[in-house]
Image 1 (cartoon, rainbow, N blue to C red):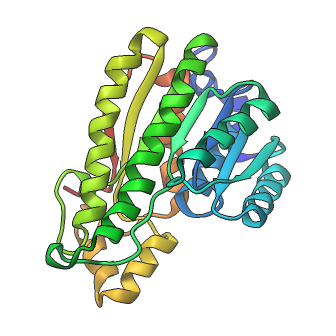
Image 2 (image 1 turned 90 degrees about the horizontal axis):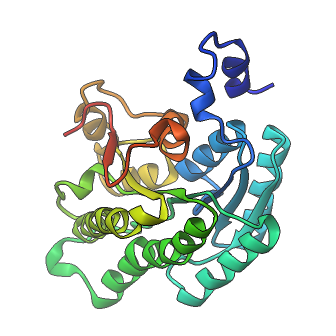
Length: 270
Protein backbone atom coordinates (compact mmCIF):
# COMPACT_ATOMS: atom_id res chain seq x y z
CA UNK A 1 0.00 0.00 0.00
CA UNK A 2 1.43 3.39 -0.95
CA UNK A 3 0.96 6.81 0.59
CA UNK A 4 -1.76 7.78 -1.88
CA UNK A 5 -3.89 4.68 -1.35
CA UNK A 6 -3.56 4.95 2.41
CA UNK A 7 -5.10 8.42 2.27
CA UNK A 8 -7.59 7.35 -0.37
CA UNK A 9 -8.93 4.34 1.56
CA UNK A 10 -9.42 6.04 4.91
CA UNK A 11 -10.82 9.30 3.57
CA UNK A 12 -14.33 10.07 4.88
CA UNK A 13 -15.02 12.36 1.95
CA UNK A 14 -17.17 9.95 -0.05
CA UNK A 15 -17.48 10.39 -3.80
CA UNK A 16 -15.77 13.78 -3.67
CA UNK A 17 -12.50 14.60 -2.01
CA UNK A 18 -9.65 12.26 -2.80
CA UNK A 19 -11.62 10.35 -5.45
CA UNK A 20 -11.29 13.45 -7.60
CA UNK A 21 -7.55 12.78 -7.67
CA UNK A 22 -7.86 9.12 -8.70
CA UNK A 23 -6.06 8.36 -11.99
CA UNK A 24 -6.95 4.66 -12.19
CA UNK A 25 -7.29 3.62 -15.83
CA UNK A 26 -5.39 6.67 -17.09
CA UNK A 27 -2.05 6.72 -18.90
CA UNK A 28 0.47 9.46 -18.11
CA UNK A 29 3.49 10.33 -20.24
CA UNK A 30 6.23 12.16 -18.32
CA UNK A 31 9.25 13.43 -20.24
CA UNK A 32 12.51 13.50 -18.32
CA UNK A 33 11.00 10.97 -15.94
CA UNK A 34 14.18 9.09 -15.07
CA UNK A 35 15.33 11.45 -12.29
CA UNK A 36 14.66 14.64 -10.39
CA UNK A 37 11.26 16.32 -10.53
CA UNK A 38 10.18 14.19 -13.47
CA UNK A 39 10.80 10.97 -11.59
CA UNK A 40 9.01 12.25 -8.49
CA UNK A 41 6.00 13.32 -10.57
CA UNK A 42 5.91 10.01 -12.43
CA UNK A 43 5.95 8.10 -9.16
CA UNK A 44 3.16 10.26 -7.74
CA UNK A 45 0.98 9.80 -10.82
CA UNK A 46 1.50 6.03 -10.65
CA UNK A 47 0.61 5.98 -6.96
CA UNK A 48 -2.59 7.81 -7.91
CA UNK A 49 -3.38 4.91 -10.27
CA UNK A 50 -1.94 5.89 -13.65
CA UNK A 51 0.04 3.66 -15.98
CA UNK A 52 3.23 5.37 -17.14
CA UNK A 53 5.42 6.20 -20.09
CA UNK A 54 8.64 7.95 -19.12
CA UNK A 55 11.48 9.26 -21.25
CA UNK A 56 15.19 9.71 -20.75
CA UNK A 57 18.13 10.45 -23.00
CA UNK A 58 19.40 6.86 -22.97
CA UNK A 59 17.38 3.66 -23.26
CA UNK A 60 19.28 1.94 -20.44
CA UNK A 61 18.47 4.68 -17.94
CA UNK A 62 14.85 4.83 -19.12
CA UNK A 63 14.48 1.07 -18.71
CA UNK A 64 16.09 1.11 -15.27
CA UNK A 65 13.87 3.93 -14.00
CA UNK A 66 10.77 2.25 -15.46
CA UNK A 67 11.59 -1.02 -13.70
CA UNK A 68 12.04 0.75 -10.36
CA UNK A 69 8.77 2.66 -10.74
CA UNK A 70 6.87 -0.52 -11.57
CA UNK A 71 8.39 -2.34 -8.62
CA UNK A 72 7.63 0.50 -6.20
CA UNK A 73 4.13 1.41 -7.37
CA UNK A 74 2.77 -1.76 -8.96
CA UNK A 75 1.80 0.19 -12.06
CA UNK A 76 3.09 -0.66 -15.57
CA UNK A 77 5.74 1.73 -16.83
CA UNK A 78 7.32 1.94 -20.28
CA UNK A 79 10.73 3.59 -20.60
CA UNK A 80 11.54 5.21 -23.94
CA UNK A 81 14.76 6.90 -25.02
CA UNK A 82 13.89 10.25 -26.58
CA UNK A 83 15.89 13.41 -27.14
CA UNK A 84 13.33 16.19 -26.82
CA UNK A 85 15.29 18.36 -29.22
CA UNK A 86 14.92 15.78 -32.01
CA UNK A 87 11.69 16.24 -34.02
CA UNK A 88 11.69 12.71 -35.46
CA UNK A 89 12.34 11.01 -32.12
CA UNK A 90 9.23 12.66 -30.73
CA UNK A 91 7.12 11.05 -33.46
CA UNK A 92 8.61 7.70 -32.48
CA UNK A 93 7.85 8.31 -28.80
CA UNK A 94 4.18 8.87 -29.59
CA UNK A 95 3.97 5.64 -31.56
CA UNK A 96 5.64 3.65 -28.76
CA UNK A 97 3.28 5.09 -26.17
CA UNK A 98 0.14 4.37 -28.18
CA UNK A 99 1.32 0.93 -29.27
CA UNK A 100 1.98 -0.05 -25.64
CA UNK A 101 -0.98 1.60 -23.91
CA UNK A 102 -3.43 2.59 -26.65
CA UNK A 103 -3.96 6.05 -25.19
CA UNK A 104 -2.37 8.97 -23.34
CA UNK A 105 -4.60 10.89 -20.94
CA UNK A 106 -1.97 13.01 -19.22
CA UNK A 107 1.15 14.59 -20.70
CA UNK A 108 3.72 16.18 -18.39
CA UNK A 109 6.23 18.15 -20.47
CA UNK A 110 8.99 18.12 -17.88
CA UNK A 111 12.25 17.53 -19.76
CA UNK A 112 14.42 20.63 -19.92
CA UNK A 113 18.06 21.66 -19.86
CA UNK A 114 20.18 24.51 -18.56
CA UNK A 115 23.75 23.24 -18.99
CA UNK A 116 25.59 26.44 -18.09
CA UNK A 117 25.28 30.00 -16.86
CA UNK A 118 25.86 32.31 -19.81
CA UNK A 119 25.52 36.11 -19.78
CA UNK A 120 23.66 37.57 -22.75
CA UNK A 121 26.81 39.00 -24.31
CA UNK A 122 28.35 35.52 -24.39
CA UNK A 123 25.39 33.52 -25.74
CA UNK A 124 26.34 31.52 -28.81
CA UNK A 125 24.03 30.46 -31.62
CA UNK A 126 24.65 26.80 -30.77
CA UNK A 127 23.84 27.29 -27.07
CA UNK A 128 20.66 29.23 -27.82
CA UNK A 129 19.41 26.72 -30.40
CA UNK A 130 20.17 23.76 -28.12
CA UNK A 131 18.15 25.13 -25.21
CA UNK A 132 15.22 26.28 -27.32
CA UNK A 133 15.07 22.95 -29.15
CA UNK A 134 14.72 20.97 -25.91
CA UNK A 135 12.82 23.49 -23.77
CA UNK A 136 10.35 24.88 -26.34
CA UNK A 137 10.33 23.13 -29.69
CA UNK A 138 10.21 19.60 -28.25
CA UNK A 139 7.38 20.16 -25.75
CA UNK A 140 5.40 22.08 -28.36
CA UNK A 141 5.78 19.26 -30.89
CA UNK A 142 4.88 16.54 -28.39
CA UNK A 143 1.79 18.38 -27.19
CA UNK A 144 0.74 19.08 -30.78
CA UNK A 145 0.87 15.38 -31.63
CA UNK A 146 -0.91 14.21 -28.50
CA UNK A 147 -3.70 16.78 -28.17
CA UNK A 148 -5.73 15.63 -31.24
CA UNK A 149 -5.54 12.02 -30.07
CA UNK A 150 -6.60 13.07 -26.59
CA UNK A 151 -9.55 14.87 -28.16
CA UNK A 152 -10.57 11.77 -30.09
CA UNK A 153 -10.56 9.81 -26.81
CA UNK A 154 -12.68 12.38 -24.96
CA UNK A 155 -10.07 14.80 -23.65
CA UNK A 156 -7.05 14.96 -21.42
CA UNK A 157 -4.64 17.12 -19.47
CA UNK A 158 -1.31 18.62 -20.53
CA UNK A 159 1.01 20.06 -17.90
CA UNK A 160 3.97 22.12 -19.11
CA UNK A 161 6.73 22.46 -16.52
CA UNK A 162 8.24 25.95 -16.62
CA UNK A 163 10.01 27.81 -13.78
CA UNK A 164 9.49 30.87 -11.61
CA UNK A 165 12.31 32.32 -13.70
CA UNK A 166 9.87 32.47 -16.61
CA UNK A 167 8.23 35.49 -14.97
CA UNK A 168 11.44 37.41 -14.40
CA UNK A 169 14.83 36.27 -15.64
CA UNK A 170 18.09 36.49 -13.76
CA UNK A 171 21.72 37.11 -14.72
CA UNK A 172 23.33 34.23 -16.58
CA UNK A 173 20.12 32.30 -17.15
CA UNK A 174 18.47 34.42 -19.84
CA UNK A 175 18.39 31.67 -22.45
CA UNK A 176 16.87 29.17 -20.02
CA UNK A 177 14.35 31.52 -18.43
CA UNK A 178 13.26 33.01 -21.77
CA UNK A 179 12.74 29.53 -23.21
CA UNK A 180 10.48 28.69 -20.29
CA UNK A 181 8.66 32.00 -20.76
CA UNK A 182 8.05 30.95 -24.34
CA UNK A 183 6.63 27.61 -23.16
CA UNK A 184 4.42 29.48 -20.71
CA UNK A 185 3.07 31.56 -23.58
CA UNK A 186 2.52 28.41 -25.64
CA UNK A 187 0.56 27.00 -22.70
CA UNK A 188 -1.95 29.83 -22.97
CA UNK A 189 -2.22 29.38 -26.75
CA UNK A 190 -2.65 25.60 -26.49
CA UNK A 191 -5.41 26.02 -23.91
CA UNK A 192 -7.26 28.36 -26.27
CA UNK A 193 -6.81 26.19 -29.36
CA UNK A 194 -7.65 22.85 -27.73
CA UNK A 195 -10.51 23.77 -25.42
CA UNK A 196 -13.01 22.35 -27.92
CA UNK A 197 -11.13 19.03 -27.78
CA UNK A 198 -11.68 18.93 -23.99
CA UNK A 199 -7.92 19.06 -23.57
CA UNK A 200 -6.87 21.21 -20.63
CA UNK A 201 -3.41 22.79 -20.74
CA UNK A 202 -1.74 24.36 -17.72
CA UNK A 203 1.75 25.33 -16.63
CA UNK A 204 3.45 24.43 -13.37
CA UNK A 205 6.25 26.76 -12.28
CA UNK A 206 8.62 25.25 -9.71
CA UNK A 207 10.88 27.31 -7.53
CA UNK A 208 14.04 25.87 -5.96
CA UNK A 209 13.96 22.07 -5.67
CA UNK A 210 16.88 19.86 -4.70
CA UNK A 211 17.56 18.25 -8.08
CA UNK A 212 20.62 17.49 -10.19
CA UNK A 213 20.04 20.71 -12.13
CA UNK A 214 20.00 22.70 -8.89
CA UNK A 215 23.12 21.10 -7.44
CA UNK A 216 24.88 21.47 -10.79
CA UNK A 217 24.17 25.19 -10.76
CA UNK A 218 25.49 25.37 -7.20
CA UNK A 219 28.84 23.95 -8.32
CA UNK A 220 29.22 26.85 -10.75
CA UNK A 221 28.14 29.65 -8.43
CA UNK A 222 29.24 30.06 -4.83
CA UNK A 223 26.34 30.63 -2.43
CA UNK A 224 23.71 29.71 -5.03
CA UNK A 225 21.74 27.30 -2.82
CA UNK A 226 21.67 29.70 0.11
CA UNK A 227 20.50 32.55 -2.11
CA UNK A 228 17.78 30.38 -3.66
CA UNK A 229 16.52 29.28 -0.25
CA UNK A 230 16.48 32.84 1.09
CA UNK A 231 14.47 34.01 -1.91
CA UNK A 232 11.50 31.93 -0.70
CA UNK A 233 9.19 32.89 2.13
CA UNK A 234 9.85 29.50 3.72
CA UNK A 235 13.64 30.03 3.54
CA UNK A 236 14.35 26.57 2.19
CA UNK A 237 14.80 24.42 -0.89
CA UNK A 238 12.09 21.84 -1.48
CA UNK A 239 12.43 18.09 -1.93
CA UNK A 240 11.27 16.72 -5.33
CA UNK A 241 8.32 14.91 -3.71
CA UNK A 242 6.80 18.25 -2.74
CA UNK A 243 5.75 18.90 -6.33
CA UNK A 244 3.64 15.73 -6.56
CA UNK A 245 0.40 17.08 -5.10
CA UNK A 246 0.20 19.90 -7.63
CA UNK A 247 0.85 17.73 -10.67
CA UNK A 248 -1.76 15.18 -9.56
CA UNK A 249 -4.22 18.04 -9.11
CA UNK A 250 -3.58 19.33 -12.63
CA UNK A 251 -3.67 15.82 -14.13
CA UNK A 252 -6.90 14.74 -12.48
CA UNK A 253 -10.58 15.65 -12.43
CA UNK A 254 -9.89 17.75 -9.34
CA UNK A 255 -8.87 20.52 -11.77
CA UNK A 256 -11.63 19.92 -14.32
CA UNK A 257 -12.40 23.67 -14.58
CA UNK A 258 -8.76 24.75 -14.73
CA UNK A 259 -7.08 25.47 -18.07
CA UNK A 260 -4.78 28.12 -19.44
CA UNK A 261 -3.43 28.75 -15.95
CA UNK A 262 0.03 28.75 -14.40
CA UNK A 263 0.59 27.56 -10.83
CA UNK A 264 3.71 28.37 -8.83
CA UNK A 265 5.14 25.80 -6.43
CA UNK A 266 7.89 27.94 -5.04
CA UNK A 267 7.54 28.46 -1.31
CA UNK A 268 6.31 32.00 -1.83
CA UNK A 269 9.20 32.99 -4.14
CA UNK A 270 8.42 36.01 -6.29
